[in-house]
Structure formats: structure tokens, C-alpha cells
Image (cartoon, rainbow, N blue to C red; front, side, top):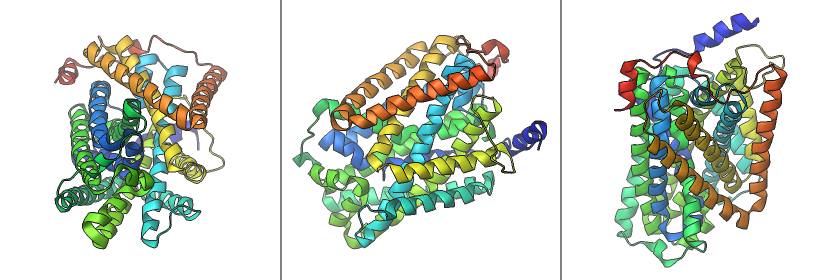
Length: 461
């Protein structure tokens, strides 16, 4: 297949208006709730101690500041590549934009392995199996299933996301209400203290932010959302609001059911453990079923988004691509590569290290977005600079605290994260130089049409 014909094939896959507002919200909440509640509640409690529900509130606040950059950029230039588009507008098609985009893609793939292992962990709880080779095996099987759903097309993903998101949000909300009611609202977690104190709480916010980062799934599918200049921002804010309410409700339910020590001991399956004391065996099995639905739908939505982002990076010649003898479009190849890498991570890393890597990569990329928009685009798209700088400062503070905590408890993962970031930067610089592309740190704004006055007005609303 020639490059020209392949490009036409790929372009045909991006169908304007193929994802409704409801479908986009379902995708965003699907990714967030799939990982945030079931995979990260125990990890967050392990750092924040008895006040871990407040960590979710702090994460939501930081996320709202961060979302400002993405909403403003997506309103001005909705794109099927989302993050890659934002970074390219801010920095030009050079090393910084390419490397930060790859870090975002890696954090999304890491999230997929996190969700896959969480699915497997909860699936094995009714059988009393904690860990072992079945966890990565079942996780990889789920990733393959998610791939099969994705190759069936946007409409299948959208319908699946809507149904599954409705089921799990309603189910998780009922779990939280029932658990709070049965426990009488007594905060059991107050019996144990956080060994790491304020630094541990600040570091836990990094994982809470990771629980909300699914909103970037929406920006990565911006061009396919109906009326994107209006609905991308609305979708992001609605998704964050829904997830904040669900997270706080469930976190409070867990805090009234288990002590801090019990949550830490069962951090990979904290919700299932919390259901037992207050809801009995029926509640336990229903919680496991909800976990399976939530993680499966989250994985499907995440693979859908990351494959599109990688496809755009390939089309922009910011990352290398090889067919390896396969037929089909670039996006079909990216689906396969995404599934392969997510499966490998599922086998190689446990939940704690997977979550840590995802937090490092995402926060670094997020800071690059805010700095680039503030430095090069704030006047062009008429955004408030103080909000961008506040988002940047909050990310930096959280990243510093998280790095300090991890350096004390698991220095190897800090070294792995730093080495991976450096490797991505070096690889991108070499690739772009080999292909005759040079950095353009000042951005490429002049190469693109100005956002219309109508779009600018929407950015400020």
C-alpha cells in the first residue's frame, strides 16, 4: 500500500461527529473510574493514611487547574491527536513535543496494564488467590479482548462505553451509599496514622491525579466528538465532576469499613475487602463484579484513545513506524503495538510500580503542556496566564513530594522513570535529526490558522 493511499485510508477512520457528548463522557469516566477506584484506592491510602479520601479531593482540584490548558487548546484546535496537537502547537514539531507526547502515550499504556492487573486481582479474590502467575495471564487475556472490541470500530466502542459506564457508576454509587449506611458512618481509618505524614499525603495526590487523567482521553478524540468546539470542554468538566463525586463517596465508604492497616494489607483489592464487613458475602461478590465491569470498560476506552494518539504522531513523522509485514492502516498497527506493550508491562511489573511509572510520566508531560501553552500560546488563544502557572506549580509540588516518597521506599522505580524519560528524549532527538527535522522551540503557531473569534469567545466561557 502506498503512503498516499494509506493516508487516505487512515483519514477515513476519523469520522467527524462519530462520538456523541454522552459517548465521550462515558469514555472519559470509563477510563478514570476503571483505574481510579479499584486500582488506586489502596495505593493512595498507603501513602496518605487515614485522610486518604481528602487526597481524592486534592487530586480533583489539581486536575481542574490542569484541565484548563486542555480545554482551551481543544476548543481552538479540536484534533484526533489531542495531546500531540497541543504540544506541537506549543513547541513546534521537535524533540520536546515528540518526547512529551510519547511520555503521555506511555502513561496511557501503563494505565492499561494497571487496569488489566486490577481486573485479574479482583477476578481471583472469590477463589482466595492473591497474586501468582494467574494475575498477568488473566490481565493479558483482558487486553486481547479489549483489542477485539476496538477493531470493531468507533461505534462499537462508544456503545460499549455508554452501557458499561452507566452500569458501573450506578453500581459503585450504590456500593458507597450502602457501605456508609451499614457502617453507621464511623470512620474506622482514623484508628491508624500515616507513617509518612504530610509528605506522604502530598505524594499520594500524584496517584489521585493519575486516577483523574482519563479526561485526556477526551482530548485525544476531540475531532470525532460532535460539535467539538463546544462539547470537548463540557465533556471534560462533566467527567471530572462525576468522578470526583464517585471517588469521594467510595473513599468514605472504604474509610468507614476498614482501618488504615487493613487497607494497606489489601491495597490491590481494597474495595472488595471493604465490602465484606458491612455488606457480607453478597456485597463482596457484587463489588467484585463491579470491579470487573469497571476495569474492562476502562481498558477498552484507553486502548481506543492511545491508538489514535500514536497514529497522529506517526502521521506527523514524530515517531518511527514499521509495518513488520502487516497489512492494514497505521491505526490498526498501533492498536497491535499498544496491546503488545501493555501486555508486556502487565507481565513485568506489579500494581504499585505500574502506578508509580504512570504518575511520573504523566506529571512530566502535564507540566510540559502548561509551560508550552503559557510561554507560546496564552495570548493567541486568550487564556489566563495565572491559571496556567498555578497548574504548573501544583504539578511540580506534587511530583517533588511523590519523588521524595518513592526515593525512600523504592528508589529503583525512580531510577527507572528518570532513565526512561532520558531515553525517550534521546531517542526522539536522534530520530528527528535522522529524518531531517529540527527543533522549533518557539512553536509553529504561524503555520496554522488563527482560532476564529467565535472559538476564542468559547475559550473564555
